[in-house]
Image (cartoon, rainbow, N blue to C red; front, side, top):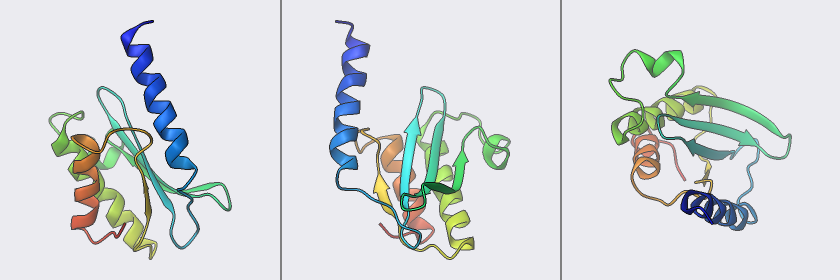
Length: 122
């Protein structure tokens, strides 16, 4: 079995375990992240209505010009701050954090800390 394939399978197993317990509502949406090799993506999701409330990524217009690299912890921290600002504009102050099976370190941790710096609670 390919090592990369095994890592992805393990991440998806962790994701399933996490999703059993994490559920977003309109007042407290689920903040889910995805990271690829070069970019990070984050969404606030209302699971009751099955709708994405707000989304941001390092690919988007808001951050693209201000970043020298998009796949590092600095970019993830700025992305966390951006999603927190967008959430505050919609009067969302508290979220449920869904790390999507990724381990809580590096870019995932930087994104979470950036969102907390701007006042988002989770």
